[in-house]
Image (cartoon, rainbow, N blue to C red; front, side, top):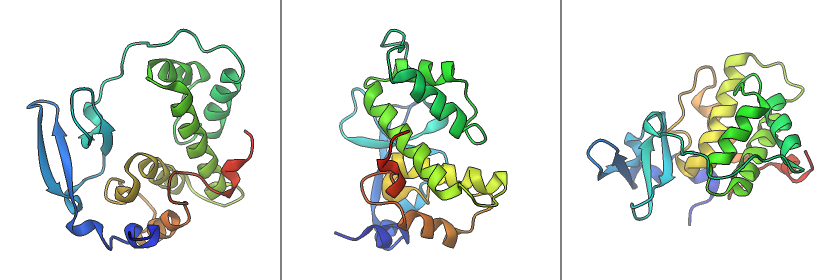
Amino acid sequence: MPGLRAIALGGRNSMKKVRLYDFQTRRIAEIPSAELAPGFASATLEGVEGKVFVNAGNVRHSPYRHGRLTEDPWPQVFEFLSELLAEVRPKAPSEWEDGFRCDCNPDREASIWINIAKAYRYFTSGKQLGLEMKRDIFDLILAYSVNGPFALETTNLRKMTREEAQNLLTQIPAGGASTPESNTDL
């Protein structure tokens, strides 16, 4: 099994095939992973076996599956995400709540987003970075949390070089968008 460094540097992905789902035709095609483009995300779809890549722009939000999330620690989670990601993912705390209410498993999804936010803070805190670089860092962390080893292929970098992106990816431990800082409280 290749290490994360080899995967991030494209060592094994170029020959690997991935499954791509088309919402219009409802068909799955196999394509080389090198053909993945920014905006595609790995997903598990109801009625489709296994993971597939989809054009994230074609994904619709589910209706509410849960009531209001008002018990602790939910309000703190919404506030934390809203404040920390304000520059790169501007959402009011109520918008974060709405999103989690639509998820099948809001606890799991919140854990993922908290790790994304903490990783973002780890890579940006105390550094003189422009907004485009911050967006690249966020997009790369988000893509890694969704697409794992295909993060680089599915991220449209604005300012960051491919080499810088590969370096950032090697600093994210295998298994998720967490960093040494992610193991601390909000």
